[in-house]
Image (cartoon, helix red, strand yellow):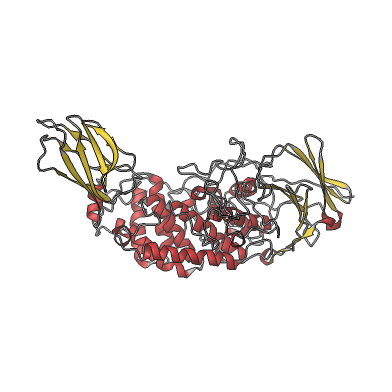
Length: 628
């Protein structure tokens, strides 16, 4: 019997290259040829032994054939047979290649209809071929609806970055004079590990795992660097540790929410009557598990799939975004509208959907959601954004071209969205061009020097697009004044007639439109509701008295010059770029780099911004370092 070798994941693994890799600091090398031959389905089995000695036996020949994975561009034909434990909580997928050169076994824990999710482990998992042990894996813990795999050899790399770009399956990345240095190597993947991916995906701030691609994948696409490739693949393997692997209990395929219209993954909301599924909060150890969040989720599997054709990565691409689709509820007809609260949520869900759509055209399997599903999701969202924003009637949409949040104008988030729109169009979805043409008018007006907005300060954190106008009551006794009306950065405007009414010489109450009490305040101290107007009332020569009043009208701004005035932004005296935050400028750079080939009017603005950023010593993270 031939010697067997186990590969869970190893950095520095060798890669077969179908064509010469792009120039790199250290190119991926060819891998050692797999030693396992055969892998006939009838000979494969596995045993899972829990810490208390209870064992589950899985036999491939007794399993259910789910149909092959076929990836024509990679020459992959892989079987897919499922066997389940007696309690239905463990699903084992036996996946030998049809050519007999590679064996893969995938272990998934959890059932979407269970009302008692748990974390399992430790346990031992042993894989056999014809009774002889192929591998024995110690699993320290297994999260609910997460999975891991054993593979006799990694899939070889069959396409270099240039091949992927020439196939129009990704936009191109490039190292520029402003691009950051190469990222540090990722932590190696271990079973149920997350490498150095951010575990709490709701964590805000600039993160190397969030972008159109994570930094490792972007650096690899730009340079072909071997270490960046290995790090990218470690993260792709770690994606399986996420709790988003929801299969239809009836078909064992990735769940199509069209067939589960009354069910949801949104745990804080009640189900419709008769709902079969409601994923209750998972009992994850917070220090070690991945916790999902739609508005901050990374896309870890796209370039790994395009590089290798590995069906495992194509599945991961679909599993993660489909989990977030499950948060829609309240109707039997799901529209799959992306995150409507934050522009970044909408951006990253669009990105993942577009990438899943691209991937679906390259693989055949009844286990995966078909291209038609992704086209439907994109069509629904295209109609939604066109109606709500492209055809919107307020100044926020018609003058400032702001979306997809109805309340906030955070340009750094909106630049995420605009860049994703440009990528969407460049990957062949030309029907999205009108949305891009609408959205990029925000960036153009911030840079053209003629709109009224200072071009040397083209981006800020949140732009306040409304203001408060104060008028003292005609019969006021006190002669103090209300200072400049400001708002918290993420405040939601409530337009209309507010009032500030005094309760004596030192205190006052603030009423919203309709004379609804918001809260009280004290003269001389900052008043802020955390969402409404913020100001300080100064005492004059004559104290205020009960019954004194200020009318406060909150109105939307309708010109770019007024927007600049309210936000306190002015042109720099020497014409230099005012960097409010370097990485936000990089997001703007990404928008213009991606849109320049599509919209000729953008290129001069990109050239000016690039020169200004270089003069200011700007730096660009790999995830924004797009080729022009």
